[in-house]
Length: 116
Image 1 (cartoon, helix red, strand yellow):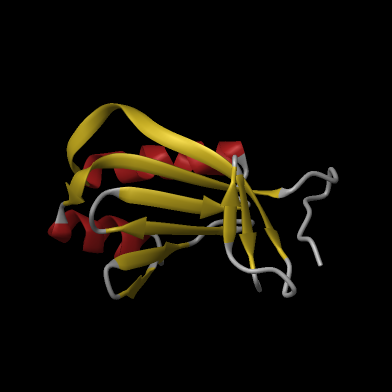
Image 2: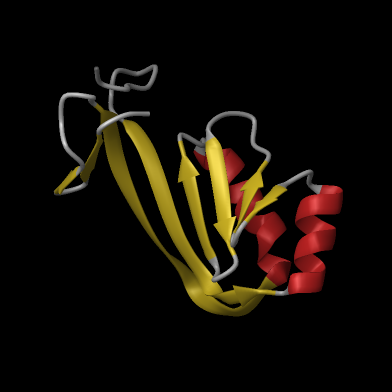
């Protein structure tokens, strides 16, 4: 079974390195109180219209199937809480598929996951 987006292409995952870490006090205020995020260990599950977005305490944002405009809004919202932001955010974009008959694999820019 392959997970595909509406336009028939593979689903997308975006990974962005924003900075070295997050300001703990601002993170609570901006993400949890104002944004409704949920804290899980060293990451925050962010509220997005579609897809899933995780912000890690070490300054990395991972978005699964989040549209570009929503991702840009998240980056704008998150920017004030990033400690020592990296000039010109470093990001990568990958495609992914799920297939219970295959092992985890990374080939070129395609991630194969055994389940969703």
